[in-house]
Length: 233
Image (cartoon, rainbow, N blue to C red; front, side, top):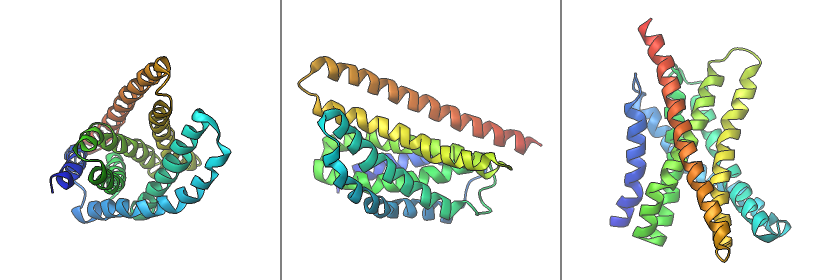
């Protein structure tokens, strides 16, 4: 029970952080639908990552195999799965009526995915894994969701030809951040004998985490300010 609680708790905390910032709270029923949709997106992701995993033999060496694992087996199928769920649940919803709403719904989908992933990893790896994932993996998925939701809202409220470009960014930006995040971790894991390389990768990873948090907060602030100006009118 302790492991189960420790795997769920960080997800709840991040969701609350995002939810409580909203000027006009979203319907709980739709938020639950997004969360459950995110949970189900694990299956959609697996349907893509399993066949992509069979390409592993093509990617030889530590660098390329790490690239294959991080992008083709993780970032690309996972973010596509989240995006598909977000799009079909939220895109035409009348509740998506403010810029920040896209971030809220996207994070709920993203952390629905993270919830299932976290439970599986923590129950297998124990409390040490729970702590590590609470600090890194869960906020990581949440911030990937912020990136997706930011551009998703821009696309939803944009009239004209740029809408498709913004939707592509909504998918591409989290894929790039997610893939880079996983790549640095996987490559570190395969380069343990090269201490200097590991230190370099660790510095890059720390820089990526800082960048991810800074960009995430900036995008949250931007959409909240947009909504605040609209509510003042």
